[in-house]
Amino acid sequence: MRESHITEITQNKKDYLSLLLLADEQENMIDLYLGRGRMFVLDDSGIKAECVVTDEGDGILEIKNIAVASGSQGKGYGRALIEFVEEKFCGEFKTLQVGTGDSPLTIPFYEKCGFTRHHVIKDFFTKNYNHPIIECGVQLKDMIVLQKSL
Image 1: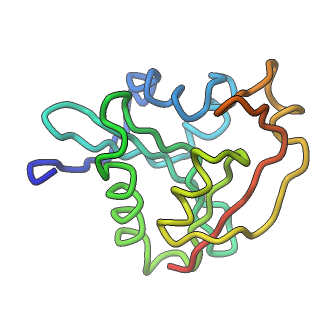
Image 2: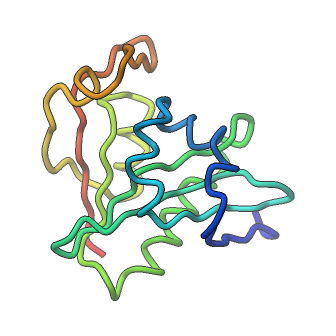
Image 3: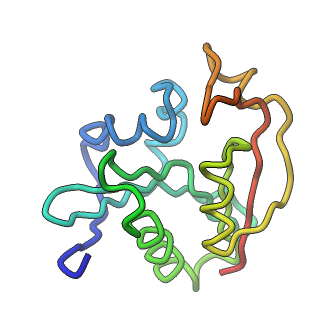
């Protein structure tokens, strides 16, 4: 990742829809935050990952979408984006927050990045998505919200 760089995307964010859909598989849900979010992409001889963050008020910056392209996962790109966001916004926000399904794929990743479980939004996925969200063979129902101090 020596040659990688992260840039902010301010226009045509939907050009990265295929990546966005890896983390949030329903486009109308992406539309709820993409316009007000700040989007960053990681380029390492091609776009490998993206991250969208939003200001949720009360000093909370939330990761609404973070995804690493298939074939590029497990190489540190997701962690690099989180570290970038932490450094960029540490003076502006007190807390970095992320909401995810209770999945063995995502929870351990965020915990390794220093996040701890904060609260649960019951039935988030079953109420807000028009189809079951299945990850690692498990249907996601509740959203687990994790936080870390900036």
